[in-house]
Length: 123
Image 1 (cartoon, rainbow, N blue to C red):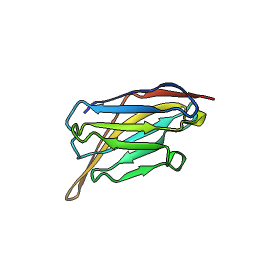
Image 2: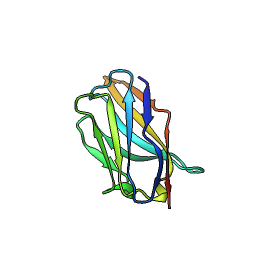
Image 3: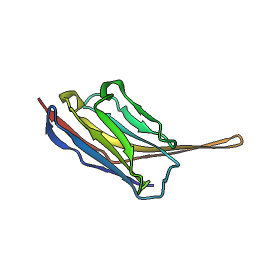
Image 4: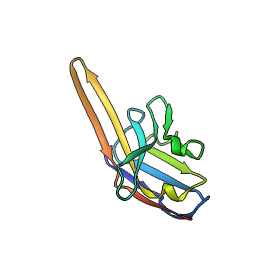
């Protein structure tokens, strides 16, 4: 599985962007898909995630402003709609596909990352 993220760019505060992440392999609904971000000098943090059952989770800092969703027609695509952007949202955004398979005593993790897309919000 290879992930490709795109849609970043430069936007003024208060503006919107939509990020897209597509998977080259078949992931269907088997994976939890997430968006992470990393600002210069900071750790990479979870922004939003959507599980196999379409349960969503958001970081407190983006609740009410960002929306994560899957493409219902193409299960290999996930979006992050970002509204009311703030300068503190500036970061490189990465998508991730994660799946854990438990077979008896054996646990296997499938963990894939996209290459990142830069989001810059000017004040």
